[in-house]
Image (cartoon, rainbow, N blue to C red; front, side):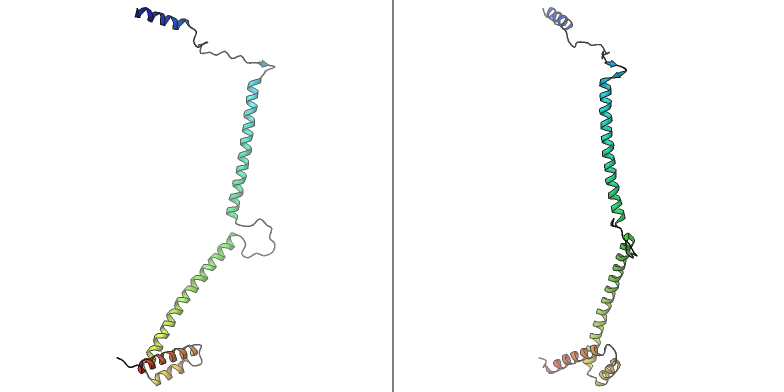
Length: 173
């Protein structure tokens, strides 16, 4: 019985219609009027239109990228300038930045030197005042007279003389 049922099932599968045309060759009927094929021409025109759109978008993108690169490299304004311009363009910008850096380094160097010189003069004035030697003080004042440092030496010496005088007056416990 099972064999009979199996034979009917196989026979039924072969007889019943399935996938229509199973041949590997598909018959496509092309409407060829006056040597032109309508569907292919329509598809060709659509592809040409799409390629033109892509080309236009590509040109616009290239133009934008070119403008950005030009702006980044050029660093100049697009306005027309007349006359002699010393610091125009990227070269002038670089020169001015370098000049600013050099001026800053020189300023910081001389500021450090001035600090050291101020500390040196403080130490010398303190040591001279502590010795309490009138001849030495007179020699220092004479050496400083008629110079730009005369006023500063006078201030430092009087300041340290007062400090020494106060330490002598204060009794030590």
